[in-house]
Image (cartoon, rainbow, N blue to C red; front, side, top):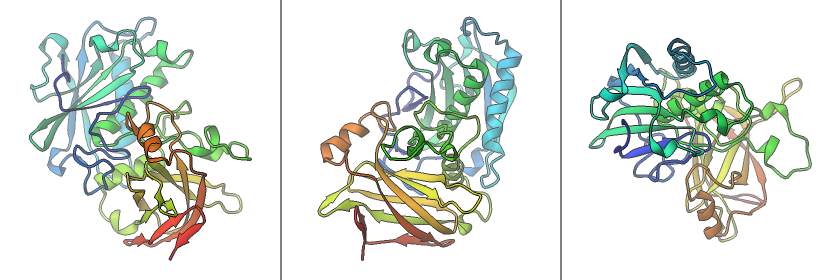
Amino acid sequence: MKGLRVLSVAALILAMAGPAGGYRLRSRSVWIPSSAQADHWQRSDFPLRFRMLENDNVPVGVDLGHDRWTAIVERSLVHWTEIPTARIDIELEEATVHLPQADQDDGINTIGFSSHEDFVDSWFTAWAAWRWDGDRLVGCDIEVNPDFVKNWGPQDPYQLLEIVMIHEMGHCLGLAHTEPHPMPLWADLPVRADPSFLPDPIMSYSNSYGVELSEDETVAVSLLYPAPGFLGTRGSVRLAVGAGDKRFAFAYVQAVRPGEPGVPAGAGPGTFTDHAGNFHLEGLTPGHWILWFHPILVTRRNAHGRLLEMADESGTSGFPHFWTWVRVSPGRNVQLAGLGARGIRP
């Protein structure tokens, strides 16, 4: 079985992240990496080539022959390869790999339904397993639970599979789990859910998914694999967040694009604070942004297996939501001394 002895595994929706994974981006050495610290493929590794894994372990009750399954995978890849601000090339080869011949050391990236015993009667939907040669990323295999439908109830299984594949390919490209948007489902605020905040990012744990990538995901992957000129047109914000002597560790920072007449406000990129309440939010378009600070929202199976527990241990899991304005300039990093519940400290 491929992917059983790899160093890093990232599981999908209703699953778990690798123990050394970062949060919005992945890293084996840094808990909350910047784009410069994150693990990613080298430019010479593209195009990334995958083959379909052939076996008889297919979903029960779903009309899913090889051609239809392959078409779903191909559609999922397009979401990543057609991001205009990123340079990503992924190919699905015509050749397939039969399960008995599959080996994690064969140098072939595969996508298919798993026969791994950990999927039996579990809530795992899928996982992406990276392969390493020392410090170099050399491969990624995606395995899907053939019983995925029973974990999700009465949903369109074909659209669900496309979402699953988009999410897992995001892991293969270097994205970790992010947070759902706070407005519609999670925030305890005296306002109605704003549809402009839906759907949630595909790389989050939520129950409100679409098949299109959010700005959080397109920005994050563009930071790893930027198209020419992208980095020079974006800015970033670096801050320390807290109240008095207490730093808000393991919280989430959601950038919100201000609304204007006829155009509602909407969620942009986001990131997590580290153990000291510091964060570095990259890839913001120039102009004014609202930064929305809130505790992590998903109470389990979140971006890191112990993220909520670590926030509880630091005593910062229940701080009140607060906001501030920030102006971003292209090619520049906004660095402020600190931000607390009452505003920015000079």
